[in-house]
Image (cartoon, rainbow, N blue to C red):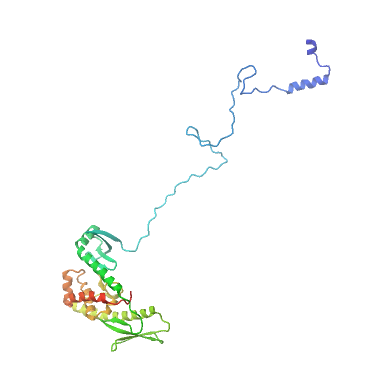
Length: 335
């Protein structure tokens, strides 16, 4: 049997094919994950098992996988330094609040070149003017010192304003009565021709010529312009008269339209007079003129100031009280 088993095949061609096949076929590499057929472990170290990636958040013990060179990592947001928003500067004077007794007093503070603290009451409330060198604490203390005067003036101002608002406005029609130099004048209207304003002192009539279709606002404007023209001429005459009596010179003069202030005088001797003074009698106009001219010598309301007013206008006390009364009785012409 051995002889037969080891003998070459009787077919040479078949034997050559079998030999070639034996040379080409090699034993398969052993499975590194399995023991060999004899129970021994593989001699080569096992290769790691490949598993498909699972996208998950790495735990603290895990390292973050490297970023693929073909993927652009997201840009890290870098905080940009920005300036804080700042409100634009206001042109209005600052307003402050101060506890005075049981009241919270609000006032407007203005800085100026004057030498002392000044107080003024108008429809907007209290206005305080102080030098730049005066501290806020000193200003508040000055307000507390004059709190009784300030509170009484504020109350008086509110009552006066309320009384004026209760009065019916003037009807702008032919025959309307308008106040002028302490008495009433009659408004007369003409339609057609040139725009003209003529006052007849004998009949105390003011003739206004209007174009056809003129509005009430146009009529009021024409009357106001006429009032202001009369005021500028008369006030300048009275200023020159009383300035000569007091021995002072004012730098300039102009009209104002302040709601509640009849006149003002600055440290550089600029005087302004409210054109609505033309509604009052001449003695009241003279009182305001003397008052403002006296401020050239005394920029305050001390007793020395009032003594100066009395030098050129001895009846200032009566005029001051009468002006306050007449201003409350004045009809509402130009609200």
